Amino acid sequence: MANPLQYYHNVTVNTVNLLECMEETGVEQLVYSSTCAVYGNPDKLPVTELTPPVPINPYGQSKLMAEEVIRWHSRSHPRFKSIIFRYFNVYGSDPEGRLGARQGRE
Image (tube, rainbow, N blue to C red; front, side, top):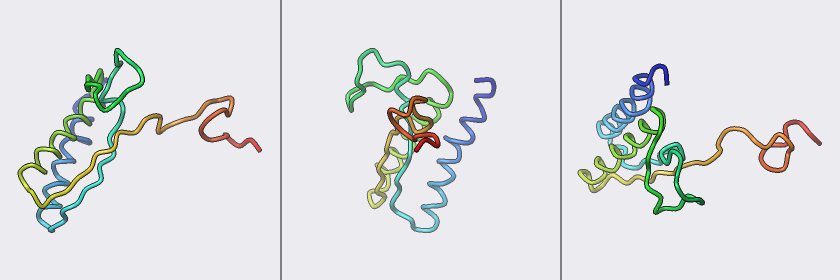
């Protein structure tokens, strides 16, 4: 939050750079890892494909912008194929070990 331009550079601008490099070298397929941060604080759970993205921080907004860049690039380049996955709870686990990594427990 203290340096939002860093997110836009690292995520959005670098996604544009990646797409340009892919185009120059003839790479026509992309699997993009996005984040549930694009949803912000949704009004209704669980989040579904119909949940509108409403990011609440620069990271979520930069990822949503990168997704849109990919979608527009795909529309303008019919041979370019992409898929975007939004991941939930990529980091961490339950400290009691009920889900996720067991954190060293046998």
